[in-house]
Length: 112
Image (cartoon, rainbow, N blue to C red):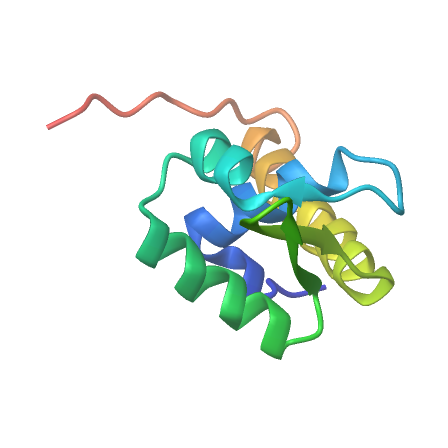
């Protein structure tokens, strides 16, 4: 099991976490996603482009009335990649919490 280098970046991880909390066919509007992940328009757009190029998200651009609206949703491939990356992160955390050898306790390191 390995990290997914596309999802590993913190903003993309937050994007994928937000999208994976939705039902399969649901999408988030760009402006709502921007608030959730605390990103600027340009930064969020660049990360969405990276995820779309990888096939992890679908981007739908439409007009509601006369206003443009961009909606983003996770693809099946993206959901699978997110689950795999989340499992990788859980394994890293679980391993860090386990004593190194039977009977040996970990000592806490003091911050510098």
